[in-house]
Length: 322
Image (cartoon, rainbow, N blue to C red; front, side, top):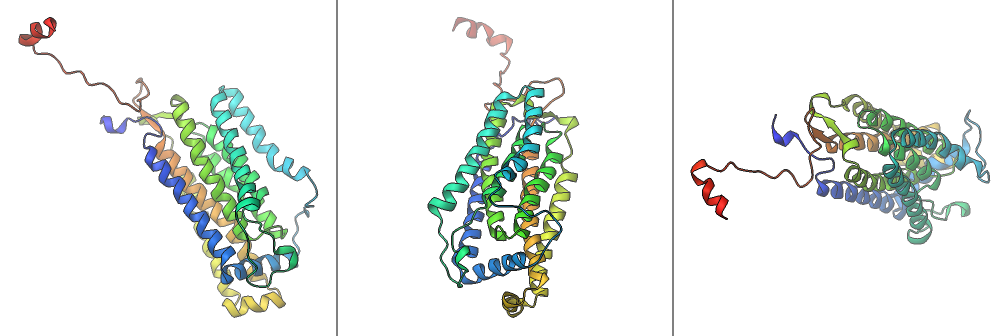
């Protein structure tokens, strides 16, 4: 077996830094277009307006109900606690919990302390405050990602799909309740993704044994990642097509006066689709960065193994004198 196939988890720190920076760049792109340009604000607003107009079969959420956050957190938290306690992954659990706290603090600081929302298209008075990134979506996505982080390499791909369903499902629910614009949820996914990478690198480095697999028994990440790529691409492209079916810019402008279902469907799809794209990238990335070891062998170290060359018999006496 080639020694190149054996590696410690999170060996390529630079790759983790680049991935985290990509999340930051994408976050800035979402903010700059959907908050700081007229066309971006218009698209966001027309989708949110239709969500405010049309009814849906799900229970309505009361913004004053503090129990909503508990409902969002409780199921993933129960799974998280089970994995941590059963596997005695206390350090990994502490790091994952820290990423949840960091992601949610970051969202609040960004939304209320750093980012502003200029009124470029005549927003209703109750829409003028900045709402990017979504706080409740950050909660839902971050607790789901915490489960992903402490999971074993074998269970991690499937839990990545479930994390996308949980975080994206709540994000879409909040959209159809007209709590947020679609860009607010996409920004929240990116905040969580960035902190998930930081937490993932720390966990891989702190617990290398639990995040290393045997080379001839590697878990297959392709089905889970492929499903997420498929759903993400189909849903996101479907959302874009719905904007065209609404009649383009002129049709969307008419929807501000006479709301159409097309922007409503577009908003739901553009809220749900990107979370699967994020999950797909995460599943693939964590799968590649998981450590590899030979069956019966030790977990490779980040420093590598010291190479000892044999001393020729005719020179051994010289080495013994030194």
